[in-house]
Length: 171
Image (cartoon, rainbow, N blue to C red; front, top):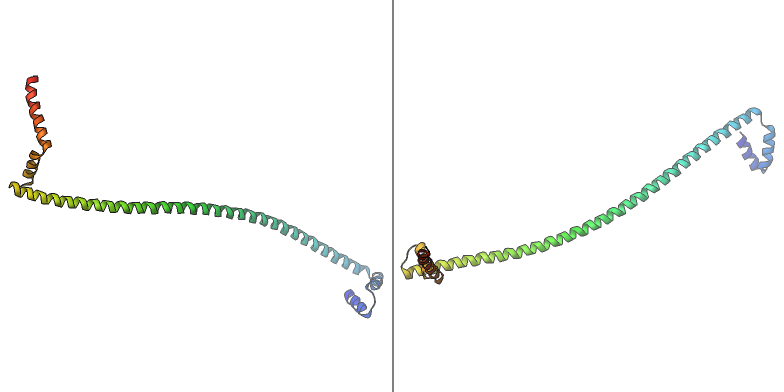
């Protein structure tokens, strides 16, 4: 009811100060107790709100510190990822080079195998011709004839003969 009076007095043009002077002199002790209770309640609420504000400020500081740590961790992870990516890139380059070298070696090996096959065919053709010329029928006969005709085989036989002749004299 007090607020209504203040509002109506302000509407009529009386100053709030004048009205308060009138009201303070006309209030009862019972009304003073109610005002004191409301004032205490309001002060308690203000204290609670201050505590809540302090708690929120401390939470905000904790969150800022956590955010700073998290940001630093993210930066470190980004650096580690970058280093890892560059290492992987280098390894991929090495693998690519090795794969190229492997391909080249496989081509060379294939060429060598083809050359060996060609030499075997050529040797087979030559052996057939030699067999026809010598009238020999088996490969063993051809090889024996080839060894007998080779200069190395002749030198080896001469050394064996001289070793046999020298051996009885040495005894």
